[in-house]
Length: 134
Image 1 (tube, rainbow, N blue to C red):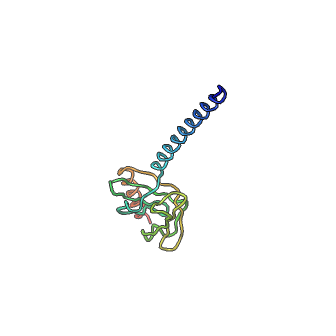
Image 2: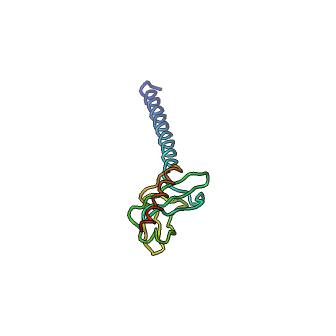
Image 3: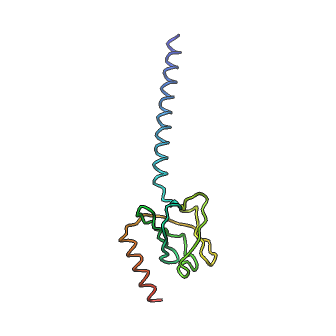
């Protein structure tokens, strides 16, 4: 085998190793990104609490509280304090899933974030004060 052929073979193997390493990094990065996705698994929801026409708290098994902020005000959500939702997987995800109020308004989810029990209590207290002023 000539030196040129051997060099080409070594170069080919180096390129293959680099591509495999980059591919592995991408997969690991994708897994991390997926676990960091702010979606809510429907099967882990214990209960919900409507704060206002744009905010719903989801209490999860395991004690986590997820605050869902809708993309815009959802007509009658606070009035009825109940809703259904449309999902395309078993998860509620921002910009994909929507909450449907009892009045029939389809309201896309804008953001989902994890909040503390103190933040949830503050939102609930603010909601109670707003109810007294209505």
